[in-house]
Image: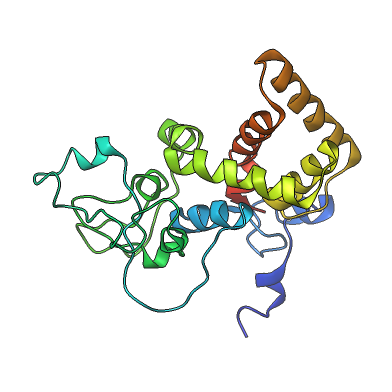
Length: 225
């Protein structure tokens, strides 16, 4: 009954009259909005790239960690399993794209993307998580190997869906925002894509991958409203 209630399903649309009567939203006349959790963000990146593995059950997986993260271990080379036989260790391994609930959690070596977006504290009990805003979050989504790889796969997905550049832009925006986008928004982002390609002298495919990486960093992607 909770998830089917009006209060739970209400949208975040602003209503001027309701705002005057209840400016603090005490009566929940609108959805207050929230940032996605760490696991939701990772899963969403995989989903828009078309590579989220929805398999249910099985053992934990060990997605590839950056070398600089592995080097912080007290036992480098043995703290985090690597190799073709390890579930999820390879970038091409479907297990590496399983939902984050299956990612192995090692207290002394947590996944950097999940940590950046406020993974639950692994040292003490964690009755509630806090949503912080930190520079490392944007840096992680922009510069991590995981983000770069998924942005390229996202671009490949768009190339399979359409040959028209403007249609690719529209589809990318609809996937990351999960809503219909206006013509003006499509035109604005298409101009950005063309300028990006011209200014940096990129091939069309490379420019599209960079554009996809930028869309993964939109507020509309990491926030639910």
